[in-house]
Image (cartoon, rainbow, N blue to C red; front, side, top):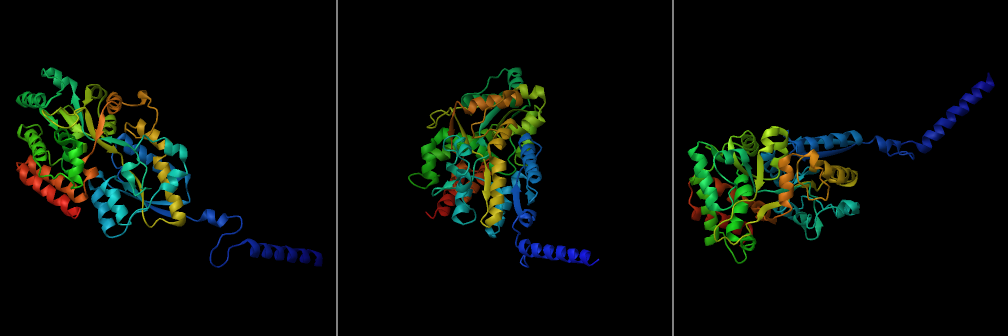
Length: 442
C-alpha cells in the first residue's frame, strides 16, 4: 500500500514539474512545442467586389473559400460589395482613416492617393520572396501600382477597356460590315436605327463606363496620348484646348445620332452586357471584364455570333487607330494597420488570390491577365480567344481614370453624362480643366 502511494505521489510531482517547465504562464505565452501558438487565430478583414455570377467572380470566391479551409488559424471578416458601389465605400472608410486589412485596390490615382495618405503598405517584401512569381508578370505590370519605388500590389488581371463587341448576325442581316472609320460607324447607327434595332448598348448608371470604355479610347484617337498625359499633369496642355473639345464633340455625335438605347443612364454595365448577349443590340463598347460575364450568361449560339475589334479611326486624329485603352487589372492592397502576425497572414491571402495558380485560374475564367500563363483555348469561349489574340496585336493607351486625379476623373464621368443629355462640350471641358487643376494645386 505504501509503495503504491509513493509511486502515485512521484507521478503527480513529475506531471507538476513538466507542466511548470513547458506550460503557458499567466500572460498566455506559448509553450515550447508551439501548440498554443498554433491554436491562436489571426483575424483579417477582407473587402472585395467579386459579387456577380460571372466566371471570374465565381473563381475568386472559390479561391477565398479554399484559403479559409487551408488556413483554419486565419479568420476572415469578409465584406463583399457590388462593383458599382465599391470605390465609394472604400473611399469613405479611407477618409475616416479606417482601412480594411486586405482589399481590392485600383492602380493609378487610387494607389497614389492612398500611398500619399499613409493608408496602405508596400508589398515589395512579399513579391521579392517569390522570384518566379515576380518574373512571370509581363513587362511594366507593376508600374501602375508603384510609387517612389514601392510596389503596393500585384495585378490580378489585364483590362483593355474599349473593345468594340459586335453581333455578326445582326450586322450581316442588315447589310453592314464591321465599322472601321467614324463615317462607317455613323452609317451603321443610321441603318440600325431605321430598323428599330439598338445600335450600341450602353449601361452608364455608375457614370464611369462611358469614360472608361468609350471616351478614353475615342479621345486618344483625336488628341493622341502625349497630349492627354500633358493635360493630366497640367504641364503644357489643358482640357479646354480645341482638340479635347473636339473629342467631346465626337462623343456627343454618338448621342445625337441615337447610338444608344433610351435610358442608358439608368442601367449598369452588367445589364448592358446581358442586353448585348441576348441580341437586343448590334454592338457594345466594353472592357475585357465583360468576357467572363458573357461566358457564364450568353448561349453557345450567341457566343459564336460575337466578334471583337478596336474603335473606328477618327479623320485627322493624332492618335493610333490600332489601339485599345487599357490598364493592368486591380490588385489586393494591404491596409496600414496590418502588422505582425496579421501582416504575415495578409501576405498569405494576397499570394493565394494573385499568385501563379490564381493567375491561371483567372485566365481560364475568361479574364485576361498580365501574367505569362499559357491559355488552353478549349477552356474558354470563342469570343475570349478572339479578344486574347486582339490584345496581343494592338497598342495599349491610357484610361482616363487611371491617370487623372479622383476629382478630375469624377468631372469627366459626370461631364459625359451631361454631354450625352445635351450639355455643351465647351462648358464640360471647362469643368474638367478646373477640377484637375485644383486637385493638382495649379
